[in-house]
Image (tube, rainbow, N blue to C red; front, side, top):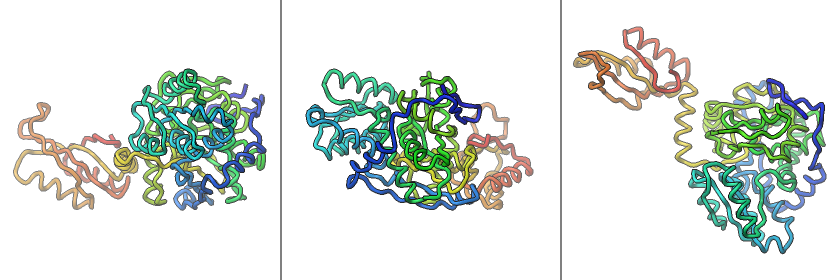
Length: 422
């Protein structure tokens, strides 16, 4: 079985069976004609500067229902018989597949039931209900919701629509690659986020059939990366525990079918940290004017972090944009901290009139903006006549932050970090 090297590069000495073909993807495209949006391919200057060549964003976050998932869900449901559709469909998802199934079922006048984790984002739950699905909150993870949905399918007779591990779903997702090849014929590298593997499996099928010279690279969140150990073991391996802000790709085990495709067709699988994802989201929002969810930004995160050796032109797939506004606020703050533009720290100083004012003046002289101040006198760790001031400060970047801290310490202040730069 294929195995992965330390850098994630996949050894294809032994090839797994190819279960989906280019013809399957092209047939899926005909099914989707008039149903999905032909999403734009947008240039990305920050990525271009980082990579030293053309870089593009495939904007699937602008797809119907906010992600690529409608492609595979619609193809799968469209190919059911009338009798099967009459029994209804059931799915499990953290949100995007849920919305894709709900929308696709509604378009084909089929009842849908969707199992979602108890902690699924409220906007995704509301949107799924809005597309007409009955939502059941079961389990802490997508894997637990999957088990509940499969049990429901067996008991009720509803057809289970797997979020990634089915040939029709893979073929539907692969239609993205056909669009990319039309929009950027000279593409040399395509980078795709991975959860269960349906998206990258479909993309790899189409890309490698038409242009085998194009590198296909998959990206997982480090906290939910089931593919690297699976590829190293030569079979799908279940993680004992996993967690990430990228809930849309938090899957504990690759699918059997998707694993076969990835092990055969994908050139490399890499991982990114939560900080990498936060930086990517902030860049996309600030520079690209693109609102993307964490799972939708991992391809960009990998490119910004420099963990993908690429040949340009490069295309990164923005796979989804269904982000909870509350999570967005936290991620913006986290991204600013990771980029050195938002500092939280404490300063110990003397408890005498004017001391706090002098401290704030020193910060102002360095051109930093104080966002929040808390004055603490009663901590038993403080010496007599000493206070602790907790500050949140906005700066212009890492170098500016370093200058600010150096200036404060040079005047005798004891600076202790409570944020990301500890």
